[in-house]
Length: 211
Image 1 (cartoon, rainbow, N blue to C red):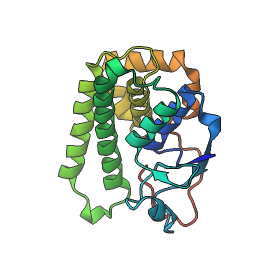
Image 2 (cartoon, one colour):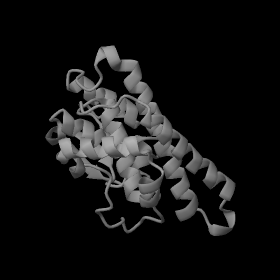
Image 3 (tube, rainbow, N blue to C red):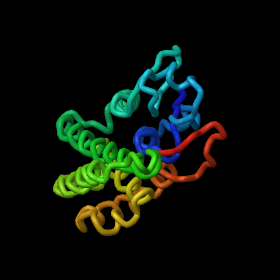
Image 4 (cartoon, rainbow, N blue to C red):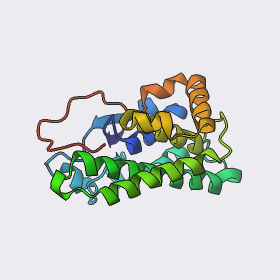
């Protein structure tokens, strides 16, 4: 059985989970809750970058990070999430969403993990600008109600912002994108089962949390 190391708040882990759900493969994978800021070295032995998600295959080999894992899962599902005629558009949207999420996680790190005397307002503002510019660009993409990697990662991106930046989710997300998000969530209510959520207590050996 495949094993996925992830954490409920991780948007990158959520990307993998929504792909598994969309392809009816969720029950074929054991989900192991593992926070990347735990002090032990188990995760680093699997992924030298010490990041989640990590997918452990049945032969013991390991895949990381989320774009690679999502492509692997898509192949398991016979390519349903990345139609060949849309492949490079879908991968572009994924790259855009990953960039938004990277910036959002970096901004959270700056305000919740870095010691206050070392925090940089300029760095934080740069990350937030990347998020808002990315959202403007995402709102121009022709997202529809079909289940593709593009729509799924867009959903996860907006879900993460709703979780960690509720004010931004209300005020900075373009109206057109908000309408799409609400319609997509209504069309596929099961998405909320695997959307980023703050649903578990932190591990006892965890020093801080950024995702």
